[in-house]
Image (tube, rainbow, N blue to C red):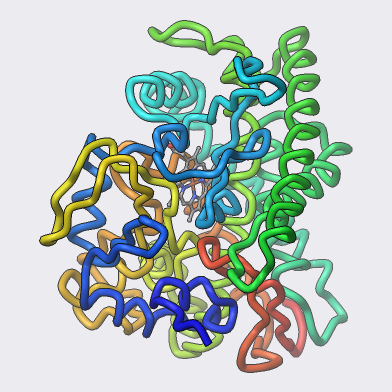
Length: 436
Ligand code: HEM
Protein backbone atom coordinates (compact mmCIF):
# COMPACT_ATOMS: atom_id res chain seq x y z
CA UNK A 1 0.00 0.00 0.00
CA UNK A 2 1.32 3.46 -0.92
CA UNK A 3 1.92 5.68 2.10
CA UNK A 4 -0.14 8.88 1.93
CA UNK A 5 1.59 12.17 2.76
CA UNK A 6 -0.01 14.22 5.54
CA UNK A 7 -1.50 16.58 2.96
CA UNK A 8 -2.94 13.65 0.99
CA UNK A 9 -4.50 12.49 4.23
CA UNK A 10 -6.12 15.93 4.60
CA UNK A 11 -7.61 15.49 1.11
CA UNK A 12 -8.77 11.97 1.90
CA UNK A 13 -12.52 11.94 2.56
CA UNK A 14 -11.98 9.60 5.50
CA UNK A 15 -10.55 12.58 7.41
CA UNK A 16 -13.12 15.17 6.42
CA UNK A 17 -14.94 15.26 9.76
CA UNK A 18 -11.81 16.22 11.69
CA UNK A 19 -8.74 17.33 9.76
CA UNK A 20 -7.38 19.37 12.69
CA UNK A 21 -5.02 16.72 14.19
CA UNK A 22 -3.46 16.36 10.72
CA UNK A 23 -2.93 20.12 10.53
CA UNK A 24 -1.19 19.97 13.92
CA UNK A 25 1.21 17.36 12.54
CA UNK A 26 1.76 19.38 9.36
CA UNK A 27 2.70 22.47 11.40
CA UNK A 28 5.75 20.60 12.73
CA UNK A 29 7.27 21.51 9.34
CA UNK A 30 5.84 24.88 8.23
CA UNK A 31 6.61 24.36 4.52
CA UNK A 32 6.66 20.89 2.95
CA UNK A 33 7.44 19.94 -0.66
CA UNK A 34 5.06 17.38 -2.21
CA UNK A 35 6.17 14.74 -4.69
CA UNK A 36 4.34 16.61 -7.49
CA UNK A 37 6.50 19.71 -6.91
CA UNK A 38 3.91 21.75 -5.01
CA UNK A 39 4.58 23.27 -1.57
CA UNK A 40 2.18 23.05 1.37
CA UNK A 41 2.32 25.85 3.98
CA UNK A 42 0.65 25.24 7.34
CA UNK A 43 1.76 27.85 9.92
CA UNK A 44 0.10 31.24 10.55
CA UNK A 45 3.22 33.39 10.22
CA UNK A 46 4.34 31.84 6.94
CA UNK A 47 0.81 31.90 5.41
CA UNK A 48 0.34 35.59 6.25
CA UNK A 49 3.79 36.44 5.01
CA UNK A 50 3.18 34.68 1.66
CA UNK A 51 -0.27 36.23 1.23
CA UNK A 52 1.38 39.67 1.48
CA UNK A 53 4.30 38.76 -0.77
CA UNK A 54 4.15 40.16 -4.33
CA UNK A 55 6.25 37.17 -5.44
CA UNK A 56 3.19 34.95 -4.86
CA UNK A 57 0.53 35.02 -7.58
CA UNK A 58 -2.97 33.65 -8.15
CA UNK A 59 -2.86 33.36 -11.94
CA UNK A 60 -2.74 29.65 -12.88
CA UNK A 61 -1.32 30.54 -16.31
CA UNK A 62 1.98 31.36 -14.59
CA UNK A 63 2.46 27.86 -13.17
CA UNK A 64 5.20 25.75 -14.63
CA UNK A 65 3.42 22.63 -13.38
CA UNK A 66 -0.26 22.71 -14.30
CA UNK A 67 -2.98 21.02 -16.26
CA UNK A 68 -4.95 23.07 -18.68
CA UNK A 69 -8.28 24.17 -17.21
CA UNK A 70 -11.61 23.35 -18.77
CA UNK A 71 -13.50 26.37 -20.01
CA UNK A 72 -14.18 28.73 -17.21
CA UNK A 73 -12.38 26.88 -14.48
CA UNK A 74 -8.76 26.49 -13.68
CA UNK A 75 -7.69 23.01 -12.84
CA UNK A 76 -5.00 21.38 -10.87
CA UNK A 77 -5.04 18.41 -8.62
CA UNK A 78 -5.70 20.81 -5.77
CA UNK A 79 -8.20 22.86 -7.66
CA UNK A 80 -11.16 22.49 -5.39
CA UNK A 81 -10.85 25.99 -4.05
CA UNK A 82 -13.00 26.51 -7.11
CA UNK A 83 -15.69 24.75 -5.21
CA UNK A 84 -15.45 27.72 -2.92
CA UNK A 85 -14.61 30.78 -4.93
CA UNK A 86 -13.97 29.41 -8.41
CA UNK A 87 -11.31 30.88 -10.58
CA UNK A 88 -14.11 31.61 -12.96
CA UNK A 89 -13.16 33.29 -16.15
CA UNK A 90 -14.24 34.12 -19.64
CA UNK A 91 -13.07 32.63 -22.87
CA UNK A 92 -11.46 35.65 -24.44
CA UNK A 93 -10.02 34.39 -27.69
CA UNK A 94 -9.01 31.31 -29.57
CA UNK A 95 -5.42 30.35 -28.90
CA UNK A 96 -2.89 30.08 -31.72
CA UNK A 97 -2.57 26.36 -31.21
CA UNK A 98 -5.94 25.46 -32.64
CA UNK A 99 -9.28 24.78 -31.09
CA UNK A 100 -8.39 25.58 -27.46
CA UNK A 101 -9.66 28.86 -26.13
CA UNK A 102 -7.73 31.00 -23.72
CA UNK A 103 -9.42 31.38 -20.35
CA UNK A 104 -9.16 34.81 -18.79
CA UNK A 105 -9.71 34.27 -15.08
CA UNK A 106 -12.01 36.45 -13.03
CA UNK A 107 -10.21 38.78 -10.64
CA UNK A 108 -9.76 36.12 -7.94
CA UNK A 109 -7.40 34.39 -10.37
CA UNK A 110 -5.50 37.47 -11.53
CA UNK A 111 -2.43 39.26 -10.23
CA UNK A 112 -1.71 43.00 -10.05
CA UNK A 113 -2.14 45.27 -11.89
CA UNK A 114 -5.19 43.59 -13.57
CA UNK A 115 -6.51 42.18 -10.29
CA UNK A 116 -6.35 45.53 -8.53
CA UNK A 117 -8.04 47.43 -11.35
CA UNK A 118 -10.93 44.98 -11.76
CA UNK A 119 -11.40 44.63 -8.00
CA UNK A 120 -11.55 48.44 -7.71
CA UNK A 121 -14.09 48.54 -10.54
CA UNK A 122 -16.14 45.82 -8.85
CA UNK A 123 -15.91 47.53 -5.46
CA UNK A 124 -17.00 50.99 -6.66
CA UNK A 125 -20.72 50.15 -6.96
CA UNK A 126 -20.65 47.63 -4.06
CA UNK A 127 -19.32 49.23 -0.93
CA UNK A 128 -17.97 52.20 0.99
CA UNK A 129 -17.19 54.96 0.49
CA UNK A 130 -19.21 55.16 -2.73
CA UNK A 131 -22.19 52.99 -1.67
CA UNK A 132 -21.92 52.77 2.13
CA UNK A 133 -25.42 51.40 2.67
CA UNK A 134 -25.66 48.54 0.18
CA UNK A 135 -25.01 45.69 2.64
CA UNK A 136 -26.47 47.40 5.72
CA UNK A 137 -29.70 48.01 3.77
CA UNK A 138 -30.11 44.25 3.38
CA UNK A 139 -30.47 43.68 7.13
CA UNK A 140 -34.26 43.92 7.45
CA UNK A 141 -34.75 41.82 4.34
CA UNK A 142 -32.39 39.18 5.72
CA UNK A 143 -34.29 39.04 9.01
CA UNK A 144 -37.57 38.52 7.09
CA UNK A 145 -36.02 35.86 4.88
CA UNK A 146 -34.55 33.91 7.84
CA UNK A 147 -37.90 34.02 9.62
CA UNK A 148 -39.82 32.94 6.53
CA UNK A 149 -37.56 29.89 6.32
CA UNK A 150 -38.02 29.14 10.02
CA UNK A 151 -41.83 29.42 9.61
CA UNK A 152 -41.67 26.52 7.14
CA UNK A 153 -40.33 24.32 9.99
CA UNK A 154 -43.54 24.68 12.03
CA UNK A 155 -45.10 21.31 12.82
CA UNK A 156 -41.89 19.39 12.06
CA UNK A 157 -39.90 17.45 14.64
CA UNK A 158 -36.76 17.14 12.56
CA UNK A 159 -35.19 19.46 9.99
CA UNK A 160 -32.16 19.62 7.75
CA UNK A 161 -30.34 22.86 8.49
CA UNK A 162 -28.55 22.70 5.10
CA UNK A 163 -31.54 22.23 2.80
CA UNK A 164 -34.29 23.82 4.88
CA UNK A 165 -32.40 26.87 6.04
CA UNK A 166 -28.75 27.50 5.11
CA UNK A 167 -29.09 27.26 1.29
CA UNK A 168 -31.98 29.60 0.60
CA UNK A 169 -30.46 32.54 2.50
CA UNK A 170 -27.22 33.23 0.56
CA UNK A 171 -28.75 32.11 -2.73
CA UNK A 172 -31.66 34.53 -2.42
CA UNK A 173 -29.45 37.39 -1.21
CA UNK A 174 -26.75 37.09 -3.87
CA UNK A 175 -29.42 36.78 -6.57
CA UNK A 176 -31.15 39.85 -5.23
CA UNK A 177 -27.87 41.75 -5.01
CA UNK A 178 -27.09 40.94 -8.63
CA UNK A 179 -30.60 41.64 -9.86
CA UNK A 180 -31.39 38.05 -10.87
CA UNK A 181 -35.20 37.77 -11.27
CA UNK A 182 -36.81 35.49 -8.63
CA UNK A 183 -38.05 33.05 -11.31
CA UNK A 184 -34.41 32.36 -12.39
CA UNK A 185 -33.01 31.72 -8.89
CA UNK A 186 -33.71 27.99 -8.82
CA UNK A 187 -31.98 27.53 -12.19
CA UNK A 188 -28.93 29.52 -11.07
CA UNK A 189 -28.77 27.61 -7.82
CA UNK A 190 -28.74 24.36 -9.80
CA UNK A 191 -26.00 25.68 -12.12
CA UNK A 192 -23.79 26.81 -9.23
CA UNK A 193 -24.26 23.52 -7.42
CA UNK A 194 -23.39 21.56 -10.55
CA UNK A 195 -20.22 23.64 -11.05
CA UNK A 196 -19.21 23.20 -7.45
CA UNK A 197 -20.09 19.53 -7.16
CA UNK A 198 -18.39 18.79 -10.47
CA UNK A 199 -15.10 19.33 -8.77
CA UNK A 200 -13.85 17.39 -5.84
CA UNK A 201 -10.54 16.50 -4.47
CA UNK A 202 -11.04 12.92 -3.51
CA UNK A 203 -7.66 11.41 -4.45
CA UNK A 204 -9.29 7.99 -4.50
CA UNK A 205 -11.34 8.93 -7.59
CA UNK A 206 -9.81 7.82 -10.89
CA UNK A 207 -8.16 10.34 -13.21
CA UNK A 208 -10.89 9.64 -15.81
CA UNK A 209 -13.66 10.30 -13.32
CA UNK A 210 -12.04 13.54 -12.21
CA UNK A 211 -11.52 14.62 -15.82
CA UNK A 212 -15.14 13.81 -16.66
CA UNK A 213 -16.36 15.86 -13.72
CA UNK A 214 -14.12 18.78 -14.66
CA UNK A 215 -15.41 18.75 -18.22
CA UNK A 216 -19.00 18.62 -17.03
CA UNK A 217 -18.32 21.48 -14.70
CA UNK A 218 -16.72 23.49 -17.52
CA UNK A 219 -19.80 22.94 -19.69
CA UNK A 220 -22.12 24.05 -16.90
CA UNK A 221 -19.93 27.07 -16.43
CA UNK A 222 -20.44 28.01 -20.07
CA UNK A 223 -24.21 27.82 -19.49
CA UNK A 224 -23.81 30.15 -16.52
CA UNK A 225 -21.83 32.61 -18.63
CA UNK A 226 -24.46 32.54 -21.36
CA UNK A 227 -27.12 33.26 -18.78
CA UNK A 228 -25.04 36.15 -17.39
CA UNK A 229 -24.50 37.63 -20.86
CA UNK A 230 -28.23 37.71 -21.48
CA UNK A 231 -28.88 39.17 -18.01
CA UNK A 232 -26.26 41.89 -18.58
CA UNK A 233 -27.95 42.79 -21.88
CA UNK A 234 -31.27 43.18 -20.10
CA UNK A 235 -29.69 45.33 -17.36
CA UNK A 236 -27.91 47.48 -19.94
CA UNK A 237 -31.27 48.29 -21.53
CA UNK A 238 -33.15 48.72 -18.26
CA UNK A 239 -30.70 49.43 -15.42
CA UNK A 240 -31.98 49.14 -11.85
CA UNK A 241 -30.46 49.78 -8.43
CA UNK A 242 -28.85 46.30 -8.20
CA UNK A 243 -25.11 45.57 -8.24
CA UNK A 244 -25.05 44.19 -11.78
CA UNK A 245 -26.58 47.42 -13.10
CA UNK A 246 -23.95 49.21 -11.00
CA UNK A 247 -21.13 47.22 -12.60
CA UNK A 248 -22.47 48.26 -16.03
CA UNK A 249 -23.38 51.91 -15.51
CA UNK A 250 -21.91 53.22 -12.24
CA UNK A 251 -18.18 53.47 -12.73
CA UNK A 252 -15.46 55.46 -11.01
CA UNK A 253 -11.97 56.71 -11.90
CA UNK A 254 -10.99 53.40 -13.57
CA UNK A 255 -13.68 53.80 -16.22
CA UNK A 256 -16.31 51.28 -17.29
CA UNK A 257 -15.71 47.55 -16.92
CA UNK A 258 -15.10 45.62 -20.13
CA UNK A 259 -17.92 43.20 -21.06
CA UNK A 260 -15.84 39.98 -20.44
CA UNK A 261 -14.88 41.34 -17.00
CA UNK A 262 -18.53 42.02 -16.12
CA UNK A 263 -19.47 38.46 -17.14
CA UNK A 264 -16.63 36.86 -15.17
CA UNK A 265 -17.16 39.10 -12.13
CA UNK A 266 -20.92 38.46 -12.00
CA UNK A 267 -20.35 34.70 -12.33
CA UNK A 268 -17.65 34.81 -9.66
CA UNK A 269 -19.91 36.66 -7.23
CA UNK A 270 -22.75 34.25 -7.79
CA UNK A 271 -20.64 31.19 -7.03
CA UNK A 272 -18.39 32.74 -4.37
CA UNK A 273 -21.34 33.88 -2.32
CA UNK A 274 -23.02 30.50 -2.42
CA UNK A 275 -21.55 27.44 -0.76
CA UNK A 276 -19.17 29.41 1.47
CA UNK A 277 -21.94 31.08 3.47
CA UNK A 278 -24.06 27.89 3.48
CA UNK A 279 -21.15 26.13 5.16
CA UNK A 280 -20.51 28.90 7.66
CA UNK A 281 -24.15 28.89 8.78
CA UNK A 282 -24.16 25.07 8.99
CA UNK A 283 -20.78 24.83 10.74
CA UNK A 284 -22.09 27.50 13.10
CA UNK A 285 -25.22 25.59 14.08
CA UNK A 286 -23.24 22.36 14.46
CA UNK A 287 -20.71 24.08 16.72
CA UNK A 288 -23.46 25.66 18.82
CA UNK A 289 -25.20 22.33 19.28
CA UNK A 290 -21.90 20.85 20.42
CA UNK A 291 -21.50 23.76 22.87
CA UNK A 292 -25.00 24.08 24.41
CA UNK A 293 -23.76 26.55 27.03
CA UNK A 294 -22.76 28.96 24.24
CA UNK A 295 -26.09 28.38 22.45
CA UNK A 296 -27.96 29.31 25.65
CA UNK A 297 -25.78 32.38 26.09
CA UNK A 298 -26.49 33.51 22.51
CA UNK A 299 -30.21 33.28 23.27
CA UNK A 300 -29.78 35.55 26.28
CA UNK A 301 -27.14 37.85 24.76
CA UNK A 302 -27.84 38.28 21.01
CA UNK A 303 -24.96 40.78 20.72
CA UNK A 304 -22.56 37.91 21.35
CA UNK A 305 -23.18 36.89 17.74
CA UNK A 306 -20.64 39.32 16.30
CA UNK A 307 -17.66 37.82 18.12
CA UNK A 308 -19.15 34.33 17.86
CA UNK A 309 -19.16 34.46 14.04
CA UNK A 310 -15.54 35.66 14.04
CA UNK A 311 -14.61 32.74 16.27
CA UNK A 312 -16.43 30.36 13.91
CA UNK A 313 -14.42 31.70 11.00
CA UNK A 314 -11.30 30.78 12.98
CA UNK A 315 -12.44 27.51 14.54
CA UNK A 316 -14.55 25.90 11.74
CA UNK A 317 -13.86 27.95 8.59
CA UNK A 318 -15.64 27.00 5.34
CA UNK A 319 -12.52 27.79 3.30
CA UNK A 320 -9.88 25.49 4.72
CA UNK A 321 -7.32 25.63 1.94
CA UNK A 322 -6.14 28.06 -0.75
CA UNK A 323 -4.72 25.70 -3.34
CA UNK A 324 -4.38 28.28 -6.10
CA UNK A 325 -1.15 30.18 -5.55
CA UNK A 326 2.00 30.11 -7.66
CA UNK A 327 5.56 31.24 -6.85
CA UNK A 328 6.50 34.02 -9.28
CA UNK A 329 10.16 33.86 -8.17
CA UNK A 330 12.30 31.64 -5.97
CA UNK A 331 11.16 32.38 -2.40
CA UNK A 332 13.02 31.34 0.74
CA UNK A 333 10.69 30.79 3.67
CA UNK A 334 11.11 28.88 6.93
CA UNK A 335 14.39 27.44 5.63
CA UNK A 336 12.85 26.11 2.38
CA UNK A 337 13.29 27.46 -1.13
CA UNK A 338 10.00 27.48 -3.04
CA UNK A 339 10.98 27.30 -6.67
CA UNK A 340 9.65 29.76 -9.23
CA UNK A 341 6.61 28.38 -11.10
CA UNK A 342 5.67 25.92 -8.33
CA UNK A 343 2.08 25.63 -7.06
CA UNK A 344 1.77 26.81 -3.45
CA UNK A 345 -1.01 25.48 -1.20
CA UNK A 346 -1.89 27.53 1.88
CA UNK A 347 -3.69 25.76 4.73
CA UNK A 348 -5.72 28.68 6.11
CA UNK A 349 -7.59 26.52 8.62
CA UNK A 350 -4.31 25.21 10.00
CA UNK A 351 -2.96 28.76 10.36
CA UNK A 352 -6.06 29.75 12.31
CA UNK A 353 -5.38 26.89 14.77
CA UNK A 354 -1.67 27.63 15.15
CA UNK A 355 -0.76 27.70 18.88
CA UNK A 356 2.14 30.05 18.06
CA UNK A 357 -0.50 32.68 17.17
CA UNK A 358 -3.68 31.80 19.13
CA UNK A 359 -3.98 30.94 22.79
CA UNK A 360 -5.61 27.53 23.33
CA UNK A 361 -6.47 27.31 19.61
CA UNK A 362 -8.56 24.12 19.75
CA UNK A 363 -11.00 25.75 22.17
CA UNK A 364 -14.15 27.35 20.73
CA UNK A 365 -14.15 30.62 22.64
CA UNK A 366 -16.58 33.34 21.50
CA UNK A 367 -15.00 35.70 24.05
CA UNK A 368 -11.65 35.57 22.26
CA UNK A 369 -10.36 39.10 21.75
CA UNK A 370 -7.20 38.75 19.71
CA UNK A 371 -8.77 37.00 16.74
CA UNK A 372 -7.07 37.88 13.44
CA UNK A 373 -8.26 34.63 11.84
CA UNK A 374 -7.67 33.67 8.23
CA UNK A 375 -11.30 32.75 7.50
CA UNK A 376 -11.58 35.37 4.76
CA UNK A 377 -7.95 35.06 3.66
CA UNK A 378 -5.71 38.13 3.81
CA UNK A 379 -3.72 40.44 1.55
CA UNK A 380 -4.95 41.70 -1.81
CA UNK A 381 -7.46 38.86 -2.34
CA UNK A 382 -9.15 39.31 1.07
CA UNK A 383 -12.79 38.30 0.65
CA UNK A 384 -14.77 40.91 -1.24
CA UNK A 385 -18.07 39.65 0.17
CA UNK A 386 -17.00 39.48 3.84
CA UNK A 387 -19.46 42.20 5.06
CA UNK A 388 -22.38 40.38 3.42
CA UNK A 389 -21.25 36.92 4.61
CA UNK A 390 -20.88 38.21 8.18
CA UNK A 391 -24.32 39.84 8.22
CA UNK A 392 -26.02 36.78 6.71
CA UNK A 393 -24.46 34.40 9.23
CA UNK A 394 -25.04 36.68 12.23
CA UNK A 395 -28.74 37.02 11.40
CA UNK A 396 -29.18 33.35 10.46
CA UNK A 397 -27.73 32.06 13.76
CA UNK A 398 -29.46 34.66 15.94
CA UNK A 399 -32.88 33.85 14.49
CA UNK A 400 -32.35 30.07 14.63
CA UNK A 401 -31.44 30.00 18.32
CA UNK A 402 -34.15 32.53 19.16
CA UNK A 403 -36.97 30.52 17.56
CA UNK A 404 -36.08 26.81 17.65
CA UNK A 405 -37.24 25.05 20.80
CA UNK A 406 -34.81 22.56 22.31
CA UNK A 407 -32.75 21.97 19.15
CA UNK A 408 -30.46 18.91 19.33
CA UNK A 409 -28.33 16.85 16.97
CA UNK A 410 -30.02 13.80 15.47
CA UNK A 411 -26.64 12.05 15.31
CA UNK A 412 -23.07 12.77 16.43
CA UNK A 413 -21.39 13.09 13.08
CA UNK A 414 -23.12 14.66 10.05
CA UNK A 415 -22.17 13.47 6.55
CA UNK A 416 -19.63 15.87 5.01
CA UNK A 417 -19.34 17.17 1.47
CA UNK A 418 -16.51 15.77 -0.63
CA UNK A 419 -14.42 18.92 -0.81
CA UNK A 420 -11.53 19.36 1.62
CA UNK A 421 -11.04 22.99 0.61
CA UNK A 422 -14.63 24.06 1.06
CA UNK A 423 -15.48 21.97 4.05
CA UNK A 424 -18.92 21.59 5.59
CA UNK A 425 -21.73 19.10 6.27
CA UNK A 426 -23.84 17.99 3.30
CA UNK A 427 -26.78 17.59 5.66
CA UNK A 428 -27.28 18.57 9.28
CA UNK A 429 -30.38 16.89 10.67
CA UNK A 430 -31.54 18.30 13.97
CA UNK A 431 -34.51 17.48 16.18
CA UNK A 432 -36.70 20.19 17.68
CA UNK A 433 -39.68 20.37 20.06
CA UNK A 434 -41.24 23.21 18.12
CA UNK A 435 -40.83 26.68 16.62
CA UNK A 436 -41.65 29.90 18.47
C1 HEM B 1 -12.25 35.83 -1.75
C2 HEM B 1 -13.90 33.27 2.00
C3 HEM B 1 -18.41 34.83 1.13
C4 HEM B 1 -16.83 37.04 -2.85
C5 HEM B 1 -12.32 35.03 -0.64
C6 HEM B 1 -11.17 34.42 0.00
C7 HEM B 1 -11.64 33.69 1.03
C8 HEM B 1 -13.07 33.84 1.07
C9 HEM B 1 -10.81 32.85 2.00
C10 HEM B 1 -9.71 34.60 -0.41
C11 HEM B 1 -9.41 33.87 -1.69
C12 HEM B 1 -7.95 33.97 -2.11
O1 HEM B 1 -7.13 34.55 -1.38
O2 HEM B 1 -7.62 33.45 -3.19
C13 HEM B 1 -15.26 33.46 2.06
C14 HEM B 1 -16.11 32.91 3.11
C15 HEM B 1 -17.38 33.36 2.86
C16 HEM B 1 -17.33 34.18 1.67
C17 HEM B 1 -15.64 32.01 4.24
C18 HEM B 1 -18.65 33.09 3.61
C19 HEM B 1 -18.71 32.74 4.86
C20 HEM B 1 -18.38 35.60 0.00
C21 HEM B 1 -19.52 36.29 -0.57
C22 HEM B 1 -19.07 36.88 -1.72
C23 HEM B 1 -17.65 36.60 -1.84
C24 HEM B 1 -20.93 36.34 0.04
C25 HEM B 1 -19.81 37.71 -2.71
C26 HEM B 1 -20.72 38.61 -2.42
C27 HEM B 1 -15.48 36.87 -2.89
C28 HEM B 1 -14.65 37.37 -3.98
C29 HEM B 1 -13.33 37.03 -3.66
C30 HEM B 1 -13.37 36.32 -2.39
C31 HEM B 1 -15.13 38.12 -5.22
C32 HEM B 1 -12.08 37.34 -4.48
C33 HEM B 1 -11.41 38.59 -3.95
C34 HEM B 1 -10.14 38.94 -4.73
O3 HEM B 1 -9.58 38.11 -5.42
O4 HEM B 1 -9.71 40.11 -4.61
N1 HEM B 1 -13.46 34.67 0.04
N2 HEM B 1 -16.03 34.20 1.22
N3 HEM B 1 -17.27 35.83 -0.78
N4 HEM B 1 -14.68 36.25 -1.95
FE1 HEM B 1 -15.34 35.33 -0.32
